[in-house]
Image 1: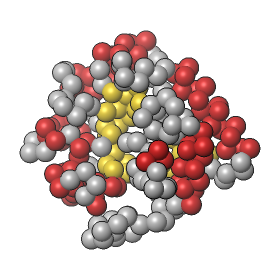
Image 2 (image 1 turned 90 degrees about the vertical axis):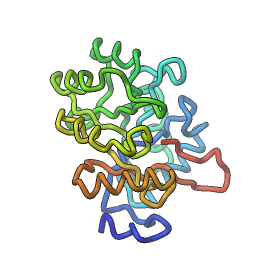
Image 3 (image 1 turned 120 degrees about the horizontal axis):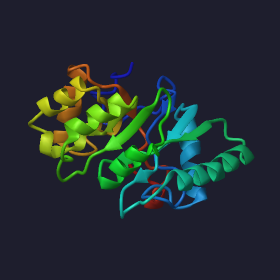
Image 4 (image 1 turned 90 degrees about the horizontal axis):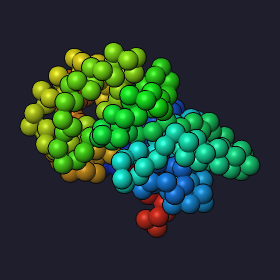
Length: 225
């Protein structure tokens, strides 16, 4: 069932078979996701309607762009949880973060100040311009410290489109991978779609996410990825 929509032009409407979304930007006003609480609640309702029963929202942490911290994320999560409870929306909301691998991330890692979910899963992302320096050492150090790094949307890093062996190397070092379902229906262009299919064919997909969607015609309700 998971891949039954690959030959369709649209993604399915029912994601009950996934149950939990691990990558979204729902805390209002702290990154490029939902701009206010109204937008957050509308997005959450839409996710529930699509079949999700649990959401682990993951605000961006990017040095100088979205300088979020554990404190700001937890404070935003409490606001979101209180609003969901008040509105009686049947969903569990938790939070981690989507960390861009940069100098600030290294500082947070050394300080032991990283938000994880589940069995110490840690969502990370790369720059879309170039891969991080010393990424092999970083992945090794994360795994050696007990983290389970998940690389967000690897199919969208176009500098490795023709170098799939780079991802295979990261896999041998313990890196996990999360593919955007929207990539499979050409949301981000054919190179991203082809790379996503390579991940599936290689059996290297550990997580899917489907948090990039519109709940109205107003762009303010787009959930960022």
